[in-house]
Amino acid sequence: MGFALSDLKLTSPAFNNLGAIPKKHTGEGEDVSPALSWSSLPADARSLALVCHDPDAPLVTPGTYGFVHWVLYNIPATTAELPEGAQGFTSGISSFGKPGYGGPMPPEGHGVHHYYFWLLALDKELDLKPGLSMWDLLGQIEPNVIGMNRLIGTYQRS
Image 1 (cartoon, helix red, strand yellow):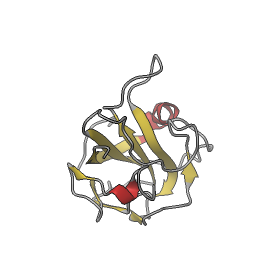
Image 2 (image 1 turned 180 degrees about the horizontal axis):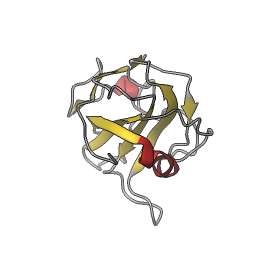
Image 3 (image 1 turned 90 degrees about the vertical axis):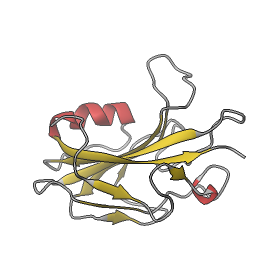
Image 4 (image 1 turned 30 degrees about the vertical axis):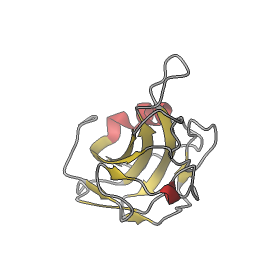
């Protein structure tokens, strides 16, 4: 399938699609990941991967695009949700240079940024090593992606 939207549904009780992400889930607040849930996974999904990416962030390093806030993978397809402040599974490295969730915090005066929470369904369990960047993860899982969709939140620094 490659990278194309599917019927998979991704939602959060913290914000609606294209809605404002509450301050609690940002670098200006408690900086905890929002709760997420999903449905309509492909029947043959075996594992999941999740990334949160801000394409509106100014580019600071050649060869990059935006800012990565979360990379999480090796999630069994039997999982239907992540609680607020989710721990567990395998963490990759964000653009902050560390594992785990790092909430929105766009530069002051930079306006509204869009945060894409991407959920990707894979046709097998890949047992990927910890510490992958978003780009490394996407490169390794691309042949196995059978479904994907996103939830977009917005945030503007106060």
